[in-house]
Image 1: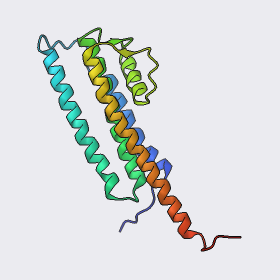
Image 2: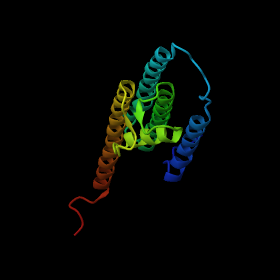
Image 3: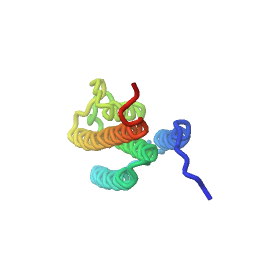
Length: 182
């Protein structure tokens, strides 16, 4: 018989670090250079982007649904959202890199995979330094789609944090003696 123990911070780190490491290894070692797709590359790229975004919507819906199921599983909800963030960042960084390789001039300042990852994370953080920015229409549309995902992720994290704070305040209020301590 297993017992339900609360998940500690170190346990959450142990769960999230392998996902981040795998995503980075996948991102940096996926062979993309030297693959020539010819003329239909633009159509194939658009189809891959649409299918990828549909997959991200499915993943986000599937993982975040847990948020609404169990109001007490805050650490699991946070882990689910962090997994979605990891996948979203990897997907968009790969797309931006491939887009700039196949259609040069879509971005100003994006030349390497690290540039693409940097741009994706800066966009996620809503910082926007301006050293790398979208110039072409495909890059602008992809960035807008990423911003919509980012707003959903940030909103979900705020909702999780707020519900966790409210729950802890309720628990603390129930534990305190009636009338308060003098």
